[in-house]
Length: 218
Image 1 (tube, rainbow, N blue to C red):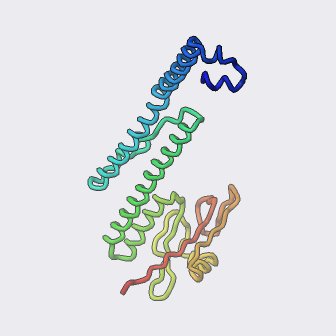
Image 2: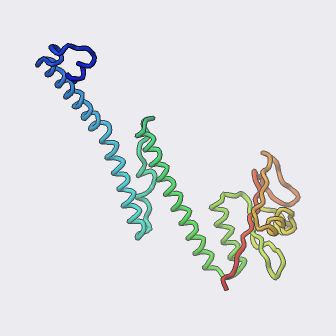
Image 3: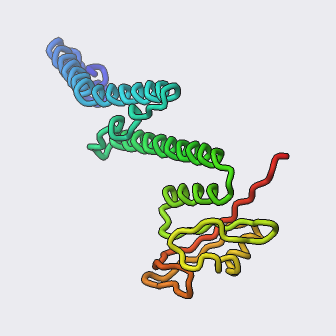
């Protein structure tokens, strides 16, 4: 710094004097010490907390792989505080969203595993359909559902929940289109609209028909 001020016109007698040297070096040490103090008080604790949470998640995933207990990776225990609008706050938010995505992924995986186990334990088509309907209701949150399937080449009702005269769905145009195309069909309904004519006892916001095509490996 003493030599730098020479370039802006400060005389060498002042810039290179012992007093100016002591003053500038002392100021530099004070600024450097203040930066180190701020880093240790503000930056270091956040980095240590982030590292601690990452280690906790890593250990939780490793433990859950063998024990099935995912409580150590729960967002309520691993989340970071989002208490600022700076880069640390953004990093905490990104980390928390990652933890939520991890938890959601585990829930989906667990649901699929439970669904597969329950479906493989049933042999009767009627029981199989009722089991599938129960899972669909829990996972999709639908207020009314029906499962249709082919029996001896004919489309028939296999199971239903909260639908009046569900057997009439076998002749529904939207159902038929979905079966022909093997693509989902859906329609959004106006709020408060009540579907009658024996189709449903509820006022749905949306009606979706999703075909499931099962192909035997034999």
